[in-house]
Length: 178
Image 1 (tube, helix red, strand yellow):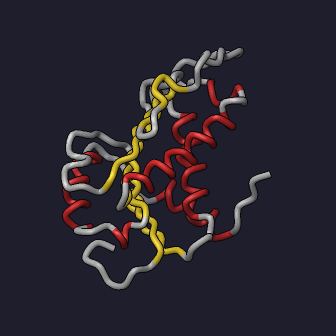
Image 2: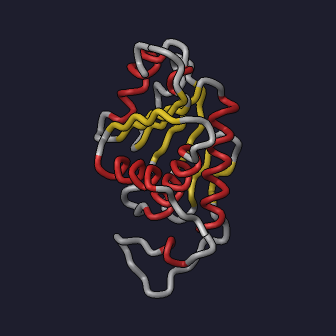
C-alpha cells in the first residue's frame, strides 16, 4: 500500500494545478519518491497522440539517472495493471499489453512502447537541454545547481509549447534561481 502524507498530497495537487512549482523539502520527506511515482503515472496514462516528454535535470548526471531508475521501477510495477494500457484516444475493452514495456530502456532514457511517452535524465550543463522538447522539466536539488539561473534560462525553451516546470530541493542558502 502506498499512502501519501497530507503534504505529499498537497504536492501532487500543486503539480496538477500550477504550471510552475517549487518545493523546498527536508531530507527523507518522500518528495522525490512521490514525484517519481507521479511522473510514472502521467507517462503511463498519456495518450499516444499526446505522450509525456519528461526531462529530469540535476546537478550531476548520476543524480538524474537515479531518479530515472525510480521512475522505471514505478512504471514496471504499474505495467502489471491493464488500466494503464487503455488509450483515451482509441479505447478498447480488452487492451493488449505490449511485449516490452519500454521501446527504449537505457540508463539515461526510457520510452514507453504503448504510447511513446519518454523520460530522459540529463545533467545541468549549459547545453544539456538545448535540443529537447519537454512537457515537463524536473529540476532536482535545484538549490545545488551551479549557475542555476543560466541553466533554467537555457532549459526554458524546451517547454515553450505549454510544458511544466517543477523544482524540488533541500535548502542551500540564497540563490538566483532557487
